[in-house]
Image (cartoon, rainbow, N blue to C red; front, side):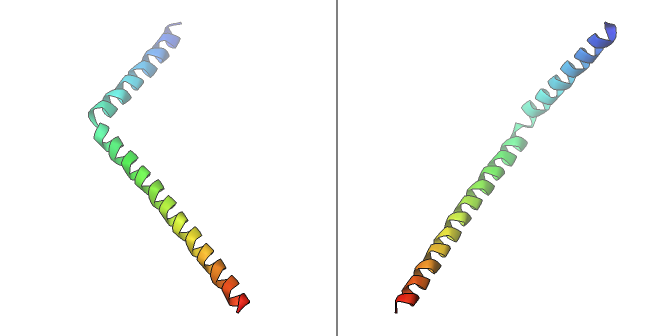
Length: 67
């Protein structure tokens, strides 16, 4: 039982150390989260422009067939 308690204590101390690190270095995680949001937004914008380019190419092909 003493071994189980020492494992539980170790896990609790590890979690406390992680929370302490995050509390003192929260700006690092905010910077990473902000970068990830910017990355997702950038991908979204590029996907929209790619879709617009495909739509314009399709319209040009249709106009070329008609004339």
